[in-house]
Amino acid sequence: GALVYQYPRRTICKSGTSMRMECQAVGFQATSVAWYRQSPQKTFELIALSTVNSAIKYEQNFTQEKFPISHPNLSFSSMTVLNAYLEDRGLYLCGARQRFSNERLFFGHGTKLSVL
Amino acid sequence: DAKTTQPDSMESTEGETVHLPCSHATISGNEYIYWYRQVPLQGPEYVTHGLQQNTTNSMAFLAIASDRKSSTLILPHVSLRDAAVYHCILRVEPGYQNFYFGKGTSLTVIP
Image (tube, rainbow over all chains, first blue to last red; front, side, top):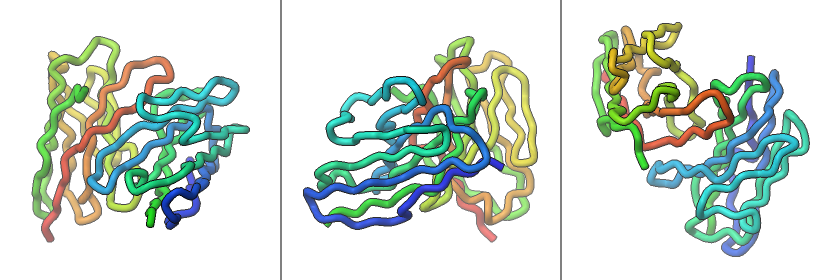
């Protein structure tokens, strides 16, 4: 079956430091990967959509300078939260879309980021 | 802008059939209705989706109104494992359109 792994599951970083998180698709080819942040209040925000061999499209209020994303192949993507502060806390979710299928996203368990 | 409206929370007893409503009065002709659910500390899980016809799978039955302005996700014989936040999302297809999640309906299942 199609699975998505994210690591680390939880991480803590000091205010002003950076944190890299990874997303691995297993059992399918992830043509595109959507990165989301779910706040402690459970609100979802779409950060960006990354499609292999295409430019990464960031949503309003999110920038490449703050959340650089790498998507080098059909099974792996990573995102870094640069200069993390309290407002960056939350559960970062990776949703991968199966190649040749636009229908659904497969999500990982997320990376929970805490900032001290 | 939230294109769907769902109740914040619902409660059911184990073994009952649950009807989760979703209103989407401004739905476009090429927008599909998707349902995802999320349990704490996990990512959303796909439940079902449909365009116009009712659909059924091992997880749920999706009833879509004839005018498509509302839909209902029906969960037969709910168990404690069905307790989750259920999200109703509209998405244009085909194409690489994004999924935009709202707050969803938090379903509590009582033993």
